[in-house]
Image 1 (cartoon, helix red, strand yellow):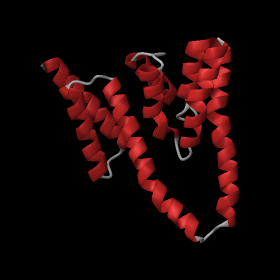
Image 2: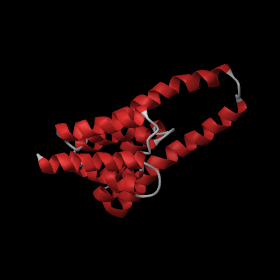
Image 3: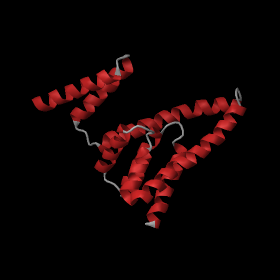
Image 4: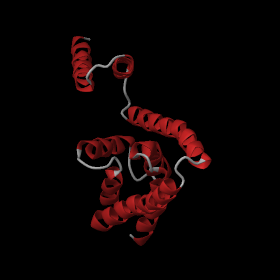
Length: 176
């Protein structure tokens, strides 16, 4: 059990630092570590835990707590949660102090410009990982692509688009 708790720290603490700006950016890495590297979960279990963590109120990285609980009960939950939140919180406090002291500085503007494309790429990788874990067929990929296209090109209400895509998916699924 102690070895498991140490491995939870070694997985989630470094990812915690990368999650500044949003936990969505590290979902692909969490999946890689827990499914591919350590084989703690299957892709299906990971997708289920991801869905549960997204359905609950709170940060996206609640999945770390679920994984810790799944692997080590209450002690696993506590260790995984602390490993996910303490390093990024300390880094955030340090960065905030620097940020406020360097308003208008060249370093600050360079960091802002440099981190934006990295964040977008990490979020895209996380979304792609979840879609792959779901093992969607052609119909699932097509409806996902259609929803993304509608949301990107219009100002449609996202809930309406989701509802319509689900209805389309079910109609095609049951007709075919």
